[in-house]
Amino acid sequence: MSAQDRADDRARGASAAPKRRPPVVSTKGPVMSLVINVWRVSLLFVFWHFVGALVWLRTHTRVPRWLGSDGREVAVRLWTIAWLTFVWVLLWGTLSWANVIAGIVLAMLVLTVLPLPRVPVEGRIHPLSVLQLVGRLIVDFFVSSVQIGWMAIRPGRPPLGAVVRVRVAIKSDMVLTLAVDYLNLVPGTMVLEIDHRRRMLYVHVFDVRSEKKVRAFYDQVAYVERMFIKAFERDSEWHPSPFHGIDEDFHHVRTVDRSVDNARSIDDTEPERRQGEPERERGDS
Image (cartoon, one colour):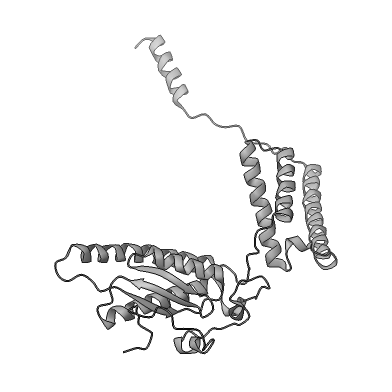
C-alpha cells in the first residue's frame, strides 16, 4: 500500500469519527437572572390586582339589564356576544382589531334591539354525564335498528304498535326537548305529543305485544330521564330562573313526582287525552 493510500484511509477515518459539539456557554449572568425574576414577580403583582379589580367590579357595579339578572345569564349573554363576533370576523375573512370591535358592537346591538327569548339557565352541565348519555344513545340507536330490521323481514304476524303515555320528572323545557329528541332518534319510538302542564309524553312505540316489552320501554324512558337530570339539572344545583314558559309550577320545585296519578291531581277538570287510542299507563296490569 502506498503512502497516498494510507493518507486517504486516515482522512476517511477522521471524517467518519463523530464530531464533538462545543460546550454551550450560558449567556445569563446575575443581572439577567435578576431581571427575569423581577419580571415574574411583576406578573404576579399585576395578576393579583387584576383579580382584585374584577372582584371590585362585581360587587360595586350594576350589570346592564340586557345582559341578564344573575351570573349564569350574564355568562350566556357574553358567550353569545363572543360567538356573534366570531361569526362576523369569519364572514369578513380577516382577523383585525377593526373587525373584532365592529363584531362586538354589532353583537351588542343585536342583543339589545333584536333580543331573542331568554333561555332559562337553571342547571349546570356535567361533561362526563353528557358523554355517557351520548354513548348510550349510540348503542340504543344501533340495537334498535337491528331489532326493527329483523321485525321487518322475519315471517309471522306484524308487531303491535300503540301510543303509550309516560310522565317524566324533567323540569326545564330545554332539557325536555333534548330528551324528546333522544327518544325520536332511537328507532322504534316517536314522541307524538307533549303535555307541558303535566309533563306527560305520548309516545308511539313500535312493538308492545307483551307486558315485558312495555316494561322495557318504561325502563328506557326512566334511564333517559335519570341521565338527563344527572347531566343537566341535578337537584342540588337547581337554580330557578324567572324566565320560563308555561310550565311555571315545575321550575320552582326541586323534585317532581313521576307518578301518573299525581299528574291527574294537577288539573282534575282537564279532559282525558287521546281517547280511543291504545295506550298504557305505568302500573297497569
